[in-house]
Image (cartoon, rainbow, N blue to C red; front, top):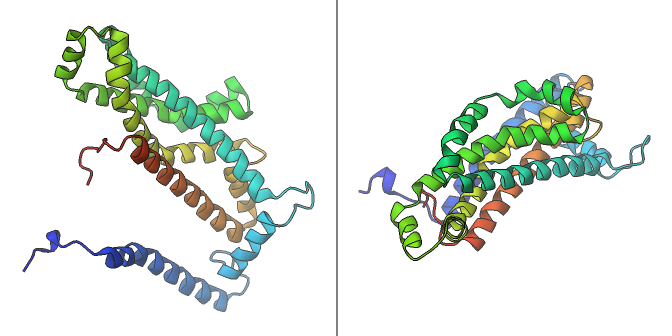
Length: 272
């Protein structure tokens, strides 16, 4: 008899096991919602699927009476623009500084500074960003950048330290300059790690974005969630949360797919 730890599910069984917890959660929500609505038809805590579908139709497919805009898509576009801008800036900065970590004269003073900055809770400096940069787009984007860039830089530094010294010595022996070693040897090692790091940074990035939009914004997914909370509009809040989760999942799958296509040779440690 094989041990339980050595038994792996087949394709059909694997799909069933993946879908099982989601199905159980949906059934639990459906049961709880029906029970609360049966007791109080005006209950707003657990709206029915019909109520949430009506809210999605109202927000996504019906023009707003005041602005004439489709609020769902306007909010999504605003949030994604801020998120992609922040992620893009963070990726460029972390990759550039990660490459510079190859040089000891740069790594020695920079590494402790990045470590200290990464320990600062990003949400604690949000008021400072609003004071210094105003309530516009810049402060929201910078919160994302400040929140995830130090962690990405430390991850890049870790990857640089994992590159075999023999590989660097061999490249120099063949006449490669520091610039050539950086571009031809180190950069190909960092790019797949960067995509992997961005996948892990998606959760914090969304958190920082929603926090910034909730405090000072006139559009965005976070802004809408905190706007309708005063009316206890769970029929709007829950679909918005589900939409954010779906967007994050799509972005995660896209980054991982891009990594497999561009760097099929890269296999993170511990991966299977």
